[in-house]
Image 1 (cartoon, helix red, strand yellow):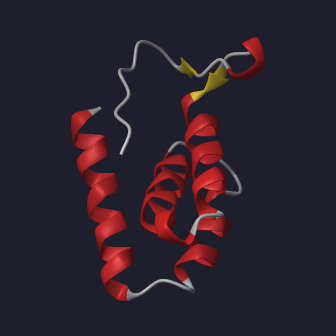
Image 2 (cartoon, rainbow, N blue to C red):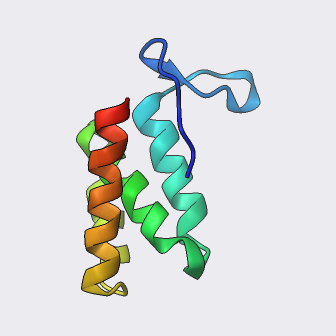
Image 3 (cartoon, helix red, strand yellow):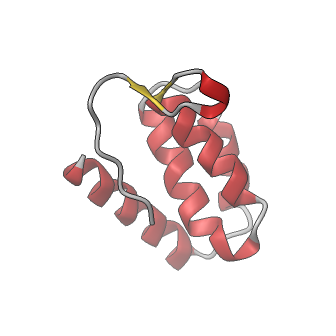
Length: 87
């Protein structure tokens, strides 16, 4: 799992354009959701993006959770809490 050092409200420079952290986390969730082996991480990133106010993050998180086990969802939630505690 990636660890980010947060300096300010902007994060990421895809194509040379700074993106807010929530949008960056949402984009990471979208990218990882396509890989069945990464659903826990994708759920975690959608959860974090939702907490940061990204409008579609909750929808994608719930959609992804529909195909996950309870253990996977619980792990994703724990990882999100740990990420928040570190960052």
